[in-house]
Image (cartoon, rainbow, N blue to C red):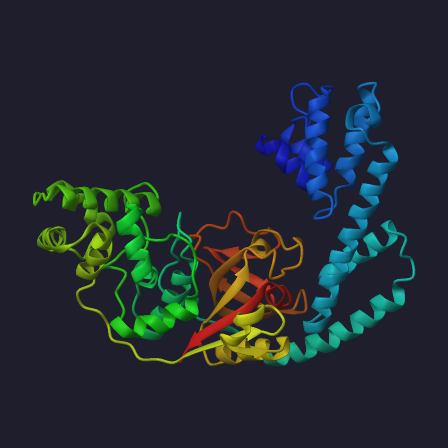
Length: 445
């Protein structure tokens, strides 16, 4: 499926079609397969985004080609009309949910126009009393929030934004952010990830299966914060968390690991070429360090031993880690991992740390970063991500408290929802969104 077609389906807007100048039905708009592919995508998306325009477009195109929906799709127009109705109702439900959440923490004016529009579209004409009630609730909440939402911005006291690139180490970048702020030094996120994921079982598996240097998947930043106290912290200048070879971090580390294991297997001590690659990811390691690692390592611990050589002067650190989860999100055993709190207490804990100028790491649904209108976050559908909350302000134009999120996607702003203010890789997110999309926080003290 080409990208233009995909975007048109999900935006479902005449403006998108006008801008691209492309037909959403491909080069042969009257081919049954084109309409069928369009319909297949609609069935997957109509309950997630308002697809009424796309459905009407599909019906019109089939009619224009002198066919019927029954002939082409094996459903009649009534079925498509029912899909459109459900799509509008789903969208109205999402808007109402957003408005409800907004009224808990501030004014609802950002959602008011859409709410009225979709109330009328879905035939809900007796909405005035409800809307009046939510306006009053929102104004009262905004008055309280304005008192407590004092401006805080710690972003200038932190290292430059980093890019996790091709690895799922967001948790390690978040832990490194919190520790960098506390220690007033730029702490290596790669060191945290490699230590956290280089446990005994991983090492054995790599040795037996000959697999890659490390697991590039995610983890728990609260666990990483705890574990880093045992060995101390490594500086970013000694172990880079970003790829400096022009490729991707994951590919570079896999390539280096493969090369190193081959060198060990061949019992070669000539390491000049290998050292040139090593310096790109492990700048703190010398040639003699590499030679010693090659001589003393097994294939499974090459990268971990190289990491230790690169971080010669670890910084001792003692601190307490506090973790709070939101009641009702985690299931079974996860409820026992941290202090469980109702949402209002959870929000208060976040604000207390920000008022004390202490950044907070949060577990967040990444879907809400790229699309604020995506389905509500649940345990089952969240795209788990981690980032740091480093600031706060009250936005008078929206009547909502907002939080400054420091991410690990680099200093750019592409990919974020266009309604979220972004600057140099950091975004301002309204409090209702943050409370809807996060379920756990940790901080150090």
